[in-house]
Length: 424
Image (cartoon, rainbow, N blue to C red; front, side, top):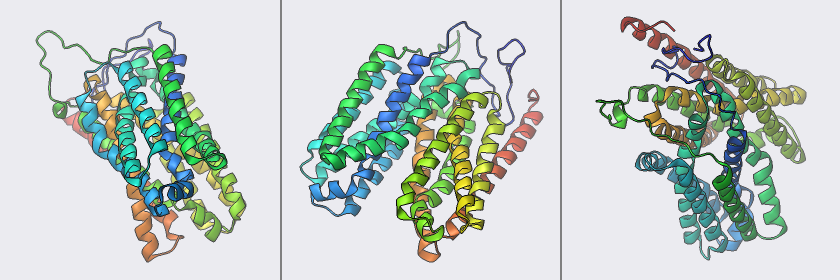
């Protein structure tokens, strides 16, 4: 809760359920350059992650393997992130953040260069595992970095700025890398991305401000293990919500292209335009988070999830009304575009400084579990039913998430009242 003088009162909100860190009012200017540098690093990292998706046929021919094997490279990458992000974050939590970002980016570059020269599929798998290790640690450090750069009241705007790098990767980075691979050669695309990663590492070295991410202990205070940090329960709650949101989203969105063509009746040529509309709408959602997210973080999250449900339900109820479907797609993009930034902001607001980087890693893990789990659930549903059932399944998950958020607020508020906590 904002204090009238501009700081934060030392109590909790119902959703957080844990004491908020008292923000100090400073005259430090908003770190635009540092945040934009982080956004650039995220842009190239996400482009690197999904580049094989656009070059799948060419990579399959070049490596002499089926296209399904190249598709598994995405799974290998995501599985590596899920297994390594939190442990690597815990191991490196006392290392300086800025040099660690640079080391991770250099590892990213090495992964791309290795992919470019990989003589066999096995070497390509190794390069993607190396990239997955770097990616998990990258998000643990970079995801928490805005929390070290700005006060809590500016977190939503800071996270929205850095998250714009991920959105730009889907709208510009991956399509540009795909076009380059088609025009020249898929190996050239990986080389170009690797060089771009090194350029971003140099920009990070010059423009990203260093941060002190370790909070010194007070006299007589004893450092507690991470698992005993009392903010961890709130972080885990957000991670559960994140996983469910991503499962609901991806069980439908993974198969959105055949839904467009087979159910909605759009032509194959219009699919790329529809996806571009969705991506651009997501950028609008990020802008709204930057403007309003800091003032209404909890209401913004509920509204974001709720509008996603309404938009998806509209596509299910009016599948043959193409104009209605396009309008719903725009609303869906705006609502979902801001959700990841709101979830990341929520974690940074809840987590204590001691577990902030580990918390960012746990959120990254939650996103990847949700992405892979959603695609799997969608595949299972398609096996027994048809495409038309997917949006209804997504809506069911979304409705459960909204109820979970509201019930969690109520339960935590009652618990705090019993414990004699201050009213929110």
